[in-house]
Image 1 (cartoon, helix red, strand yellow):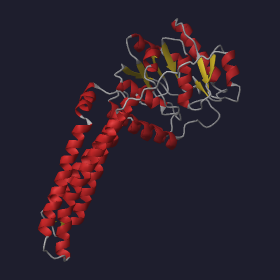
Image 2 (cartoon, helix red, strand yellow; image 1 turned 90 degrees about the vertical axis):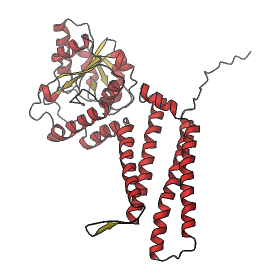
Image 3 (tube, one colour; image 1 turned 180 degrees about the vertical axis):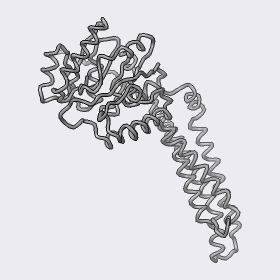
Image 4 (cartoon, one colour; image 1 turned 90 degrees about the horizontal axis):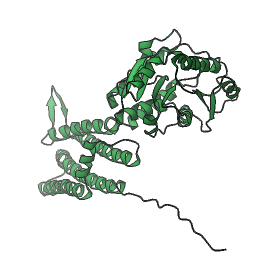
Length: 385
């Protein structure tokens, strides 16, 4: 149980947890991860027979990580110390773990939400949207991504190397479990109105944004690749359609101005797609994200020489288009019509020069990311006195 000034409800939570252990015949312990309480919560926990773990680093995730690291059981159940979850109803969680699950999530929408237990903004907007994003991005079999009551195999979750210290710790656990292809399941969990006499630590917009930001950063495909490919294709279609001249539909036309926007869209989209690859390589290199077999095969085909070659070819196309445009312009005047035709001819040439240069630079940066830095072990130097 993560704890920060929960003196009003902590004893009740510990007693419910103890009742579950006694009734189920489970050999277990109750760990309170205290995150700097100043209301005597630590003394209450000890008086109720819980083991108190002091976690200096502030934050919901930091408290949970400290408590998980200090726990000694095969299975760990975690839940808030505000009496909003029923610790006597952990039986279904334990059953799923014993049948082979690595992570068992509670689902408050299936288990029931008491009146006033969850703000309408969270119930009808925040949680459904974030849970949908989590399922879409990571194929998570979870419909309540942020339920605070969950249980898991300690060794399985410890191996995920969870790193966030704030509220997004809850999202990180599910995301990394899914990426690591752990067995993730869901059971109903009831949410009660908490018994606190103060405002909750959760801040709707701040913590909601932190969860969404985390989900985006851990999915380079949805953050960079898919939008980038869409934008690049849209830009290429616009540019190609307007190379020969303006397009007029129903008395309204698209001309070189729209063509320049198409060029810009292609460049931005292409850069975003490159970012997706570089982000994935960096994340896999640093251990933030696992890299599957398919991505490893893709990486093996990408090397500095190939990317330089591809970039050089694209760049030469731009150079060739530039030369052809100069020859075509030779001896022509520079009136308004000619100037517009000049822009129409120059835009694809610039696009080739830019995309070629970007490809070469991406290859150089990719080769830097792949450099393995060896950190030598410290060597003890013994000097004779």
